[in-house]
Length: 188
Image (cartoon, rainbow, N blue to C red; front, side, top):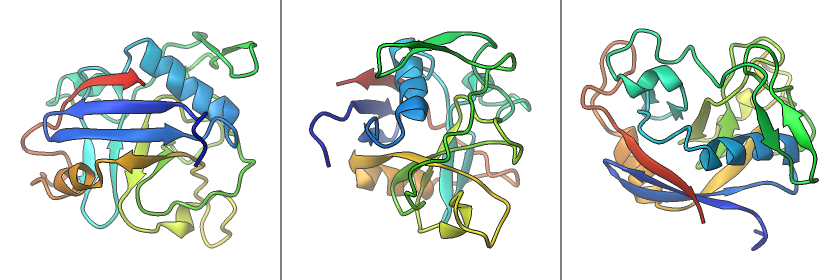
């Protein structure tokens, strides 16, 4: 792990965890994420999909209302900008998504952060998931599946909080019955 990689602290209603962002291996995706953190985009959102033995999904702006049926369908506003680690300014696509960064072959191992998407190219924006098991079939370079979910970070502190969130009771749609709220996401 590089000490120069950005770290983000997530304070949730279930506890605090810290992630390290792979700015050196996935600079475009990492910069999008860090830009959203700096803009306080994630503050007040809920984990809208939790599947024990699989993953925890987060980052949809509609999840601010934990009862919203649109939770899991949103992202940043189209055309908004974020600063790259290379000093350049980048624009999100017209639908708020970013281009797929399918470069570093980092596997979807436990406690890694991976871009969520619709299954279509360039359809990830703000939503990501934390793997709770090794989901190698979700690797963009794994040919067993059409799924392409690039990993851009990992949990470096608070594994116990991730396990606690993973065990919350959910409804038939995998939405927690008691909302798990991210009170704040802060760049350290």
